[in-house]
Image 1 (tube, rainbow, N blue to C red):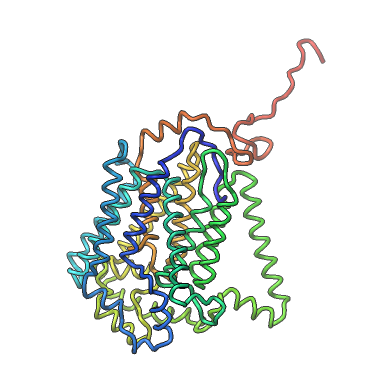
Image 2: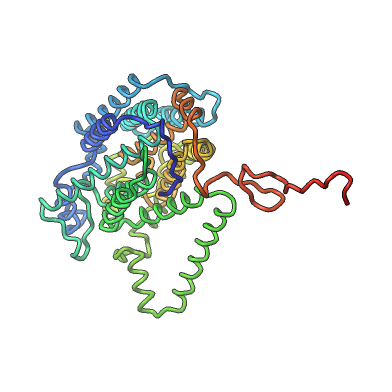
Length: 477
């Protein structure tokens, strides 16, 4: 839906049994990490009390290792190892800058233990990162991006269904009440992120013979409904940017400019309509844009003062940081939570958190890595049968926008794992799959042929560069 559909009659990807098995295994693994059947009841109870009267669970998590989380991350690594052992031959792209940037970022995170303010906490966080890397690389060696999209959709749709059932069983499913936010089996912000990624990846699903638009539309509608009930504003903004980018990059030549100009025209018309509308209408539109959460909107729900203080703390170790995952130790979590009167597990800004953890060097390495991955995915998308590479571009754009006011991506949850696996799919080379795609006869999709600038304006790549002129008959005038 977001990317051009291709008819790959020979390439069918992994079997449905393998896809479902991995989706169930990953769903169970990350369930141990951050899900609970009674989470909605806990979230509702905490929302009705002051932060000082509720135990700070984030501080407790930094103090001790949760056995369930440890088991979950071990299962993620086990899934990756099993995928690697059953995968065909994989070639490492040692000459690719993408490979070296990813290794450089990982090694810098490991090296930060040398100057960490809490080495034991950094070691735990690095172990989690290592398990995530092993799982992502193993998954990318066994499955391609089409398979990854299906695994992601199956997992997140399962979380959504179980979340609705959990709230219905706990009696907390009340979307008509004021202040309600759908949480399901995790925090509303985490649930909103999962619903948004369900919507995003569902648009890139492919089928062997014919597309099932009704199923695709149903999955997207379910994800949008879940996202609307979570009232996650940052996640919605990131989703709109990612979907808009996917709509732009899928087209070539003049059609791309038509899409861009159409989007700008709609934005201008919306601005004019808002300028000439009444105060009551503008107030209603602002309430819709804020998803009904207009309290403390001037400070972005308390984020602006938090960012200011976190940046002051980051300047103490601006270049190298405080050590990977070490800044948000128990002492700092309690100190920031007491100062701002709400439970603060992180800076609610991925860029500031990167500087706090690994300094400006780590932030620049990470940005260079993901931007290079997006560029590599765009190049792959030009090849036959590689339209799903646009998913990587959309996921990276989503994570960069989402990181402005959240610190979930990259993170230690299922959403962060999907991002790592997508980048790994672009990094690794699978010679057997590439030879299969190169041998397939690909029929061009109407309206999606490569375009170039010729003498008569933008033309399809197969058209002659210069207009053919009739050759005069010999001896004629």
